[in-house]
Length: 251
Image 1 (cartoon, rainbow, N blue to C red):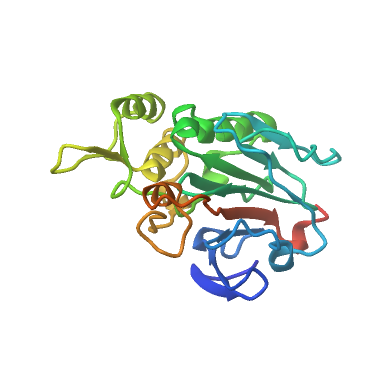
Image 2 (image 1 turned 60 degrees about the horizontal axis):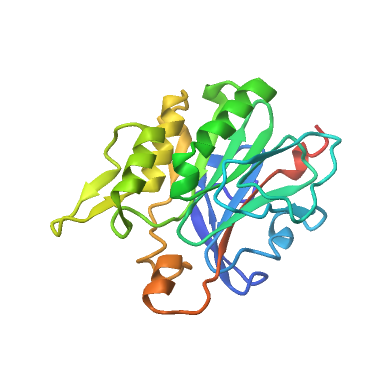
């Protein structure tokens, strides 16, 4: 276990990034972390230097890679937006720059998941798909599942069109994650939409942690939309990573 509380820790290995340790994983056998300045290419030095990292090529799909014990790592060009594993000898992760990074852990079955959910992934129900695979392939019980939803663009800054509203509503159902501003613009909070998907599948509300930070208006994060507005040529990425703690690797 990396931390016993939700806090920020300055990490000299990752160029001074602040690392976010969700309190939902405290006192469990999962090590989960969100970075705020880079996708965390040296995150192994924080989690476990002996473990390889697998991060899929993300294309806003609902494709899920499942890595079972004894399986080989996929090739680096594998396209997916979620990874599930019961292997304790690897680190899995996703990258984001406004989209929602989600980490999932079954504390009884010792299964982890890393998910990238933009509006397309959210509207395709990628979190629901991951949880369904936990239930069907690992016999997980909803009461044993912990979810950490990392920093992403929030409803305060994410104005979208009717197409996006309809697509997310279709996947997540009615909820208070859609806002109409005084200007008439419609805003959506994808973190809240994903939480609603989890709740509808029986995950306990107290087992869902959500970062309050908006990547657009909080300066410490990379933001694709902010970079577009500022006509910045490139946008960096932050990362979300999870692995079983060392004490659980041999299980």
